[in-house]
Image (cartoon, helix red, strand yellow):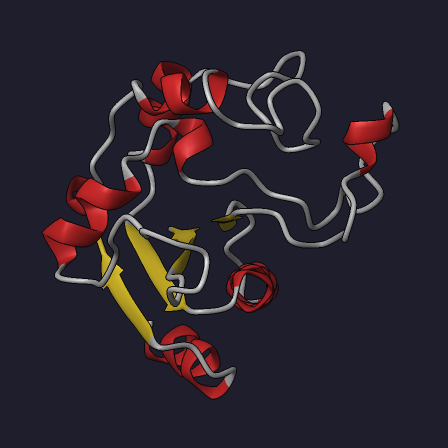
Amino acid sequence: MDKYINVALSMGVEHVVAVTPDDIVFDGRTLLKCLFGCTDWGYGCTCPSKNKFPLPWEMEPLLRRYKTVLIIHTHDKQKAQEVAFAIEREAFLDGDALAFSMSDCALCEDCAGKSGEGCRNVEQARPAFHSVGIDVFGTTAKLGLPLKTLKDTEEEQNWYAAVWLN
């Protein structure tokens, strides 16, 4: 794990912690926040509204089969995704064929899904925590990591990504 933690830190993240799937707070109600209130619902290429996207209660047993989860914290959405994917790729090259990263997608300025097109970056696009039934607020609180509801757009944001490893 030290190798992957060092990769994340060298790429400039705020925090990276290794936990087990038991440390992750799963709650399928996160889908309600996607369904009611998210402007990407029905459009985003990594959105749970997409045909054949696994539902939270289908994802939880799959994710619980991993041994370790690296939780990555940064203040930059794109950096969170870049770091998580870099670690996924490194783990894959090290022999972990099922390593899997998650983050809010920040690959394209405008998601192709909003114009009815397919994903332009299907090899790197991954789902967000909440879209697969992970309570990000509950998980970060449990781990002592910073996250709060923002009162206005000027407040500094906290972005999280994860890499699921065997």
